[in-house]
Length: 195
Image 1 (tube, rainbow, N blue to C red):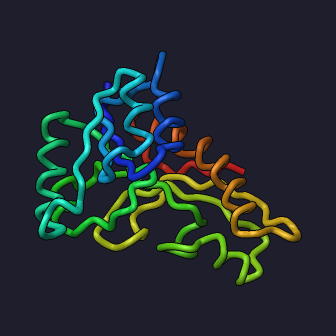
Image 2 (image 1 turned 180 degrees about the vertical axis):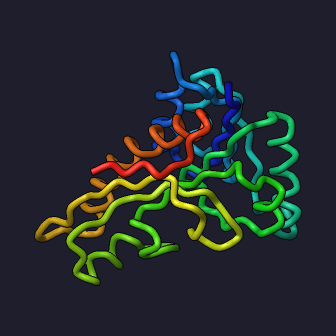
């Protein structure tokens, strides 16, 4: 049984989707939810489900490295086999990524390698793309550039706004991320492609 830690910054809707799926015959269980934002809504939801929850406020540290050392100490106590970034809005340093190499998964709201970073939906609309979507990838030192573990496609509709597109992509994220986590926890890292 794989032990999973989930890192969030806010409400944690992807965290909720992951946790809901990690029941029954799932090969993983959540052992910790950590936020870098005190009072993040996802922390209360994790605690209500009986999942240990912690805060490591990045603003309380003089450097990224000091913050990540404290974050690693929190993770070390939970001894996760996998770490899922679920709306965790911090760019991780190469040192942290190396420390947890091969264990960190992230979901990104675009069909990588298109549109790494922020404002993905607006960028897809500005480019006139016919489809958008989301990608689960392994985290490496290069931003949003790790091996792709899964993708789900979402059509761009006439009159779409970034907000409308984001809402449809989020539904796809809630399908894709749990499915990919299940496969990775089972030892399968071949990319999963959902329509």
